[in-house]
Length: 391
Image 1 (cartoon, rainbow, N blue to C red):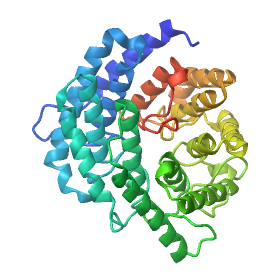
Image 2: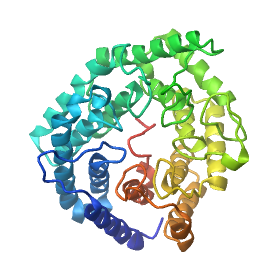
Image 3: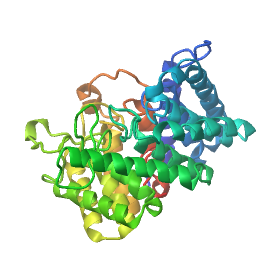
Image 4: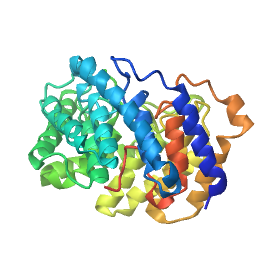
């Protein structure tokens, strides 16, 4: 186990720094920004840490702080965000994520008000179910249908209840499938499901095929047998795109060593979660083997210069080891996660890492790092924030 006596004060001090860096919350316009880089991500981090027994003395203060932040996010969302139809149903960049985190925080505080943001979240299913939703990329994780399903999965896991009806889940899954089929036929793909985001055929977790397929596997029982088969064919096609244990950001690209991306957003550290889910659903060893190769590549190349975050930073790389620990029980993955955690606090990292635009961002800043350090203290429950394969 990591040195808890050292780690707990480190997490506490980092949270205090994050709260100092937040913009003012008291104005009538509230706090802009969603889960990715805004206040809602900080609220989720505080909620996550508050659930860990090692931080029990601070639980109430963290949840109260989370409520102050998420209330400001709700004010912004209901004042300005509702007008932006493109991001209203977005998980990481808009309204769906704000409502989901508000429901979690309110519920943790024992407030009956949690039903209100939950109701707002449910209403958004009607926004993203039509095939005409979001021409720029209606199915990906940040703003599209896969993200909305991912948010519903988080709520199910954390609240212990399915927040969408079977009919709502099926309609969104069918829209993802139909959208992927239409695109694959239109672009004459040799496999059944493909998607694009702003015209780019991404493969990785952030905007690409892997997280879309991961969400379809997360709702596997809602798919018809013929559609389940299309999903597996697409998973296997993606597995065949592997180049030296990694994947290019875009379909058809060749990975050049000098600009290879080994990130959660683009590359093996994010695509690993699809193959973990495929293994958990099918129990086929080739998917676990692929996941393990992702981990080996991350151990070799995952000490990134782009900061401490989870999207394209060191903590995002290290989460792969916690995933593999839960899948295999092999303690070498705890060792590897610990070494990456230690690297975050070295002079080499501090001097070599690029400057952060936002210290408090969940995905690019230290809020995601706090989630990782907290999970390193409880590896049997560890999972990449808001991206569980174990539900």
